[in-house]
Image (cartoon, rainbow, N blue to C red; front, side, top):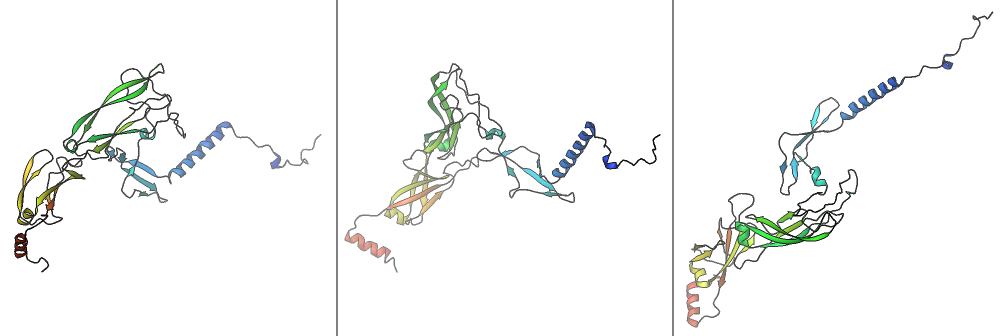
Length: 308
C-alpha cells in the first residue's frame, strides 16, 4: 500500500504550463497594433484641404491652400501654416513624362513604357524639348495674330518603319506677348524607338522695328528737331504703332534729356484687359554746324551769357 501522505509535493515551476491558442495570439496582436496606431497618429500632422478648386500660377503649376494642425499633449490642436498660408504641390501627372502625345494622321506606334513607382527609372526616357524661334513684329505682338508653321518630323508606324510626316502647327499670338514667351507642342518632335517623342517649343523673338523700340509694356520713339524749334516750342506730328498720327504740342524748351510721355499708346498689358503702356517720345536736337558773324552776335545779344 502506497503512502500518499508522505509523498513530496511537486514544485510549481516544474509543472507544465498551458499554451496560448492561435486565436488568443491573434487577439493580442490586433490589440497591440491598435494601440500603436493611436499613439503614432496623435503626433502626426494632419493636412486638411480647404474647400474650393485649386488655383494656377503663371507657369501652370497647381496651387491649393492647405490647413494643417498637430495634436498637442492636452488634446488641443495647434494650427500650422507656411509663411504664405498655403503649400504648393504638383499633381502626380507632372511627376512623370506623358506616355501619349498628339498623334498625326496615320497610325503610329508609341513606346509602351509605364513609369515604375518608387524607382529611379521610368522605363522610357523623354528627350529634351526642341526649341525654335518665332519672329514677330511689334504690330503682331500689339494686336495679335495667327501664325501657321509647317514642320517635318519622323514617325514610327505600327510595322516599325520610320517615315517622314508633314505637320501644320497653328499659334495664336496674343496681344502683349513679349520676347522669350514660350509655346510648347507636346510630343511633336521626331519619334525614336523606345523613347518618347520630344516636345517642340517655339520662343517668341521680336523683329527690330524701323521706328519704335520696346521697353516692357512701353514703346520708345526718338524724333529729330532743329534747334530753333527746341528753343521756341513747336507742334509735331507723332506716328503711332498702328499707322495713325497724332499732333503733339510742346510749349516748353526742349533740352537734352527732355522726354514727353503719351499715356495709353504703348503695348497691351497681359495682366489687365484693355490696358496699355505708354509711348515715350525723346528728342534729338540738331545744332547748326556754322553761324555767320551776324548770327553769332544776335545769339549773344538774345541769349546772353548762360553762365551768369
